[in-house]
Image (spheres, rainbow, N blue to C red):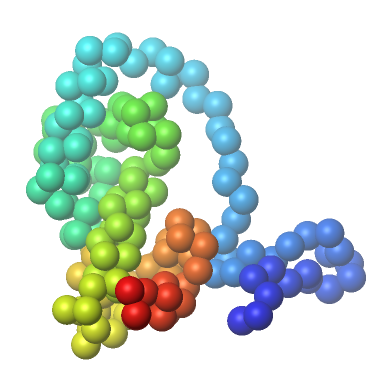
Length: 154
């Protein structure tokens, strides 16, 4: 694909079609985020980091905020508020950030040269190829194939 963004027909002139059906990020106001007690949020943040990052729960394709809330004995709304305030993103974006880090490492590593993109996607924790490609493009700005090609001779 030569052009990353193509203009949609004349009636939608001025609008840019994003690849992989990506949308512009909307910033929402949520007053309850300001009601989080700092010490509780810090403690929960540490536990979130331990479970999601250190224990690599992000590699589980169907791991959800609800699953994490049950483990942490809290509710999803509070969990989401802490993730949003500490990481400046929502829960699924947080998981995808770590999944893409793993995928980038594998795509650039010669030991994984025999693995195809779908295998790397699954090993990174994505449930399907489409969500992997969309997240990869949104975060990295190029496709996984392009990323791999750019790192072949490194």
